[in-house]
Length: 581
Image 1 (cartoon, one colour):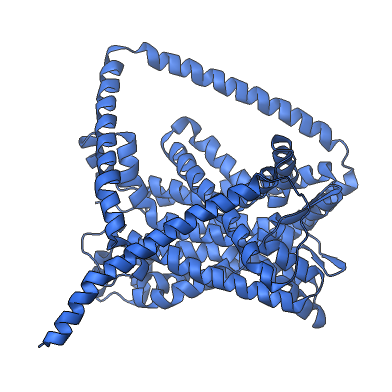
Image 2 (tube, one colour):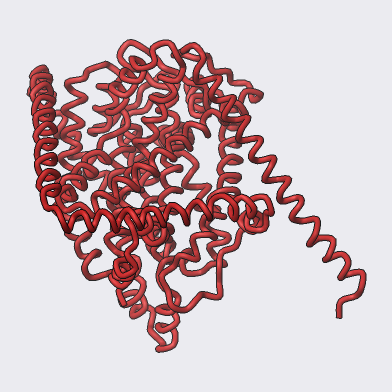
């Protein structure tokens, strides 16, 4: 029995706790507003292409702030692009094959291949403002974050159960209503876990995107990546340790303040008939749900606005259907417009291809042979890294995703490890390998493994979390053996997520080859045989014909593998391994 003192204390906590929550929410909003003003002031200042990087620890908070802004602005752009691109690819039969092939090509192109064109274009758009350089770096980080999210959303849309789609059709949902009430919730788990991988990949390429040469010009932005690269080039071990500690603190805070609440929130979107008794919890999510300020804003702003919007969309949809039933000419007009647009696009592609072929005339046969040898070496490293990664990530990912108590411990550790850029530790790893008498060949395989394995692990965790609890309970009720559980429940349940992870891991390994096979350590440039090394060297030397040819070869290899291996497996996931009633 509770005493009077205990009851009064609980009453005081119940009354005061929401006040502190609201105070924290208000402080966070004010801090966000001040951060926006600070960033706007810096971005619209006079352009400084090569900022001096100080190795004093007192500059680390500001550098970390700038890097965080770049990564999360790139993530926001990636999320918008992934949802839009995945939606059109999943529902537009005319464009689906072309768009997925384009996505295969784009995810295989390394960041350095985008770098010269992106930076020159941004500098020409904003020649006298820092915004041009900053937006160029953000777009480069975007190219390292977006592709796995687009693949994840596309795969989720293709795996939506038929009965849910039919329910939306029967209730005459508009396209926007279907997006926000079915498609985004169904894809939430996969999108959130792939978002974590994307941000981790942003940290991975941060050192490239904040400090890089373009021909005869050098660009250096204030940030944590340029701080670590400057410390590594000067052999300043103490500065590297300070930078690594700062990065770990940022990753831990990001996990606790952002990813853990999102994972706990997305747990309600599992497609199951029986609610699981074990749920991932988050104090931050609990605080947000119990905030009076956010509750009032939601009740009086967002909820009424959403209801009015859905009503207007439903009315517009009814009018469009009625108009389409009376007139058939608009459909013919749309077809004509489509073919005209496609004609212009084909003409533009042909013109660009012609100029590219003319540029390739400067590449000698000896250079082509060297590129083909490098492509074979990189191909072997990529597949070896995928095999090693799959051997440990599949069982570990299933264990984490199936046991919430284990996920409470392992998920933050996995997120911290994945978000920590291997490029920051690569100098130390290389020094150890060189001391042991091993070259960059082994080191490049290790770095490509570190870049690829997290795509598979996080997608497998998302797939295991998305398996309905009632299916797992049925397997326990019928006393399935371990082999039976894996073959009849686990592997079919995670299969679409696993294929997404393998495809994006393959692209991540190809992308990481530009760092893994060509690395500047102190006053030396370490290089091994590989296509990534030749791309990095061509970028450093401003050899654009060789850079273009190497990029084309890499894209062709990745697309061929995707067509022969991954695309049939995608079709299998869409047709056989989906949750239908």
